[in-house]
Amino acid sequence: MKQQGMKHRGLVRLTQVAIASAAFAMLAACGGGSSSNNSSSSATPAGGVNLQVVSFGDSLSDVGTYSPVIGAGCYTDQDIGSAGATGSGEENIKVAGAHTIVENMRRGMSPLDAGLDALKRIVRNYNNDMNKLQFVDMTYYILRKDGAYAGVSLWQGYTEKEPHQIAVHDGTRRSEATVFLFKGPSHEFPPFPVNMPTELTKDSVYVK
Image (cartoon, rainbow, N blue to C red; front, side, top):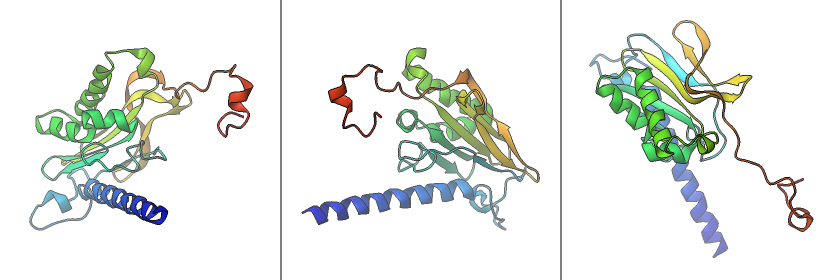
């Protein structure tokens, strides 16, 4: 029974990685290769811009790294462009962030405005409550078919000295700071209370 459970978890993990890999392949497709039939899924954007986020997370919650939900962590439409994300995965899934951004561009929004709109939807879900939003963060990196691009984030950075950035390569490799909705750094969820009873912390692997 235990072996069956481990095998099932392994298959689930393999499926998640496969979906994430396919999603990122779609995201990359908007910016690579050339095609004689003008299919944008294999055509380099007119601006020749390759775009990626500098900072990725390290868990399934960090949607930029592993995104089993296509349309949230990353999304590509061959007629419009691509968007990808990293940050608070659950909050991004609620607004289908990457898909929302691409559809915003379809309706005529610039990459910058399309990304900021998705961030504002996250804020709306918290009723603009900054006491809660300070523990949420999200970065979107956006590439339109014609090469126009943008990087936006909910907060300015993880710390005051670590602003959110995207990496851009349009013939010159460089990093660019994101356009942020809120000034200042985001915060980690509050740690354990300082004065916890000893009997609750003595065997904890989290509290040292």
